[in-house]
Image 1 (spheres, protein in one colour):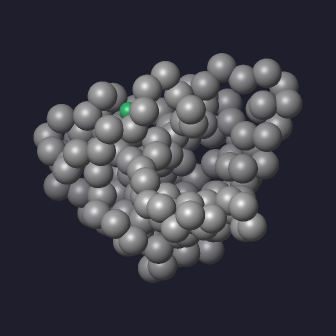
Image 2: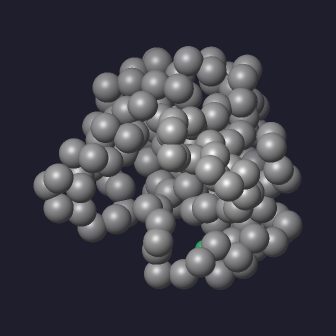
Length: 153
Ligand SMILES: [Zn+2]
Ligand SMILES: [Zn+2]
């Protein structure tokens, strides 16, 4: 991790650190929304108000936790940002099935289908392209399922 994990105290979802490669400035972003969204990320230390969101499809519910052997970092290249996606991942039960089977295609289809942002056709194609690169990196980092002690949720 480049920076400690934070959640947003406006929407109570987890935030990811981002490094601006031009300025070297660190900030936090909502990983499940394109910025700018309807509010700015307001990072605070994570507490019990956190609403679990699936890191793969952005739906509520982080029932299953995966740990990747390597930290997933998205490098947007020249003029872009470096995003630290961390190495602990929350997945909903639907995505967890596809992750266990290492089915990139099914995971991608599901995420594009249920993604919470209203998108037009080019937006959806763009989302699909971005998610594909993102899911690919996630699988390449070798996610392992952690046993949860959260009971039946
Ligand atoms: Zn927020
Ligand atoms: Zn999911």
